[in-house]
Length: 344
Image (cartoon, rainbow, N blue to C red; front, side, top):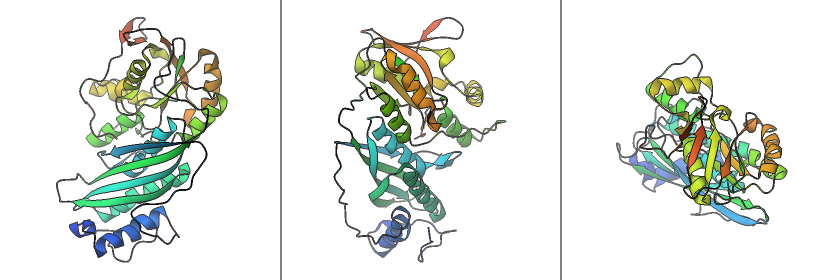
């Protein structure tokens, strides 16, 4: 992006005039946001946008992002905001098309940091084939915003015949994950606390719409999809169990966790089942379709390490349990408390 004429992008900072609605606001919008999100397009600068119709059903999702630190190994709050909303749409089976974005900026935020976040969002959207089409900006006084908060809303289109929902898990179904768990949560914690490991912990933040498209093509009747964000795998399994009125049993030996994530968890007394992910999904499908779905997932770069980790069983109590590597069985309950705040 060509640096704007009116800004010191190296040492300049956000001030209250950037949210006043006057000249400074318009210059910020046109020279930063429009230049990044719609390069080469003459902006209309209306309060909304007109979108083209598309066949199928309309799907909409919204999300807010308040992560600390703003920049971390493998991403930043900008790319995370794009990926998170795209993934929410994809978990419905929809094809994401359009995003809106709203920024709450704190007085004193470095313009260089804001530009880095905005350019990262633009790259993430382009790579996922999604357009950022409208937005809003507000500025709050120093000490009231913690740098920047980002709220995104997304619109996608769902093809007729696709019916993916958290209440469709049935006894006998198989449960799959698309790869190693806890990468994002461990990377954020290590970055925040200044922890050093022999191998760098990197967030798995990524858009899952391409992976989901391949999965639906191979197995159109996927029952459930969910990205394992806050609360990790444990939260997703409990959500699906309660939504569907079933029990879920998983095998600890089949749950992929990288050695460096395990090491970080052991050091800090955390369980990787509860760590957030921003580029992994959980899928539930009929037992006879599980191998075909697994093959499709492993055929995509974001699903290369996919595994079948468990099965659904009839249980009115909606228990989630795990067969451990030691040969026993333990409950996998909801997360109690919040050991890792501000991660997405």
